Image (cartoon, rainbow, N blue to C red; front, side):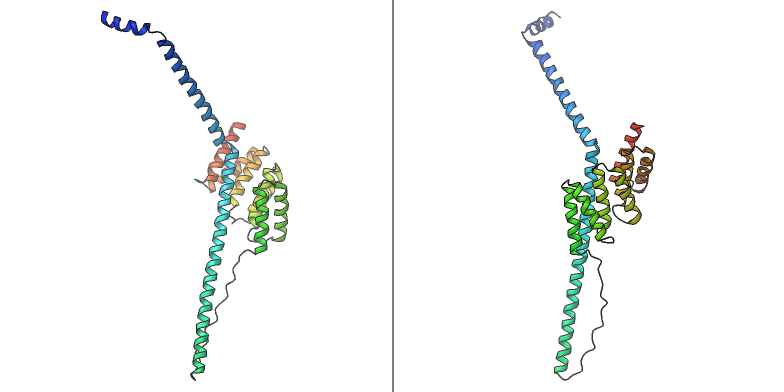
Length: 249
C-alpha cells in the first residue's frame, strides 16, 4: 500500500496534469455540442417542406422525361417500320419491272398496308410547352403562368395539356395563390384522371387545403394519397404533412 501511495503521489503532484485533463474534457464536450448543432441543422433541412417539394418536382420532371423518351422510341419504331415498308415496295416494284421487261406476267401487287397515325405532339406544341416550362424552372412564375394558360387555350387536347395544367397549378401554388392552385389541381384530376400527374395533383390538393388552413379537407386528400400510392414518395410526403397537421391542431 505504501508503494502504491508513493507511486501515485508524484503523478498527482505533476504540474498542469489535472488542468490538461480538464481542458481536454472541455474541448471534447465543446466539439460534441458543435456536432449536435450541425446535426440539428441538417435534420431541419432534410425535414423541411421545401426539400420535400423539391424532391417531388424532381420526380415529376423525371416522369416528363420518361414520357418524352417513350414518344421518341415510338417515333423511332415507326420510322424504322416505314423504312422497311418502303424498301419492300421498291423491291416489289423492281420485280414487276423486271417481269414486264422479260415478257412474263407481272407479280401481284403488294397488299395495301394500313397507315398507322401516331398521336405525337406537333413541333409547335412541344416548343410552346417547353418555353413555358423553362420559364417555370427559372422561377419566373408570372411569365410561366401566362404562357401555360395560352398553351392550354391553343392546345386543349394536346399531348402536353395535362402536364400544362399541373405546372400552371404549381406556379400558382409557388406564388402563394393557393385557392387558384387548388382549382387547377382539381381540374387536372377531373379532366385527365389517367394522367401521370394525377397523384401529384392529389398530394398538392392536400397541400393547398393545408395552406388555406382547411385541415379536415387537407387530411382527406392526404389520406387518399396514402391509400392510392402506398409505399411511394407521394405516400411519404403525405404522411409528413399529416404529421404537421396533427401538430397544428
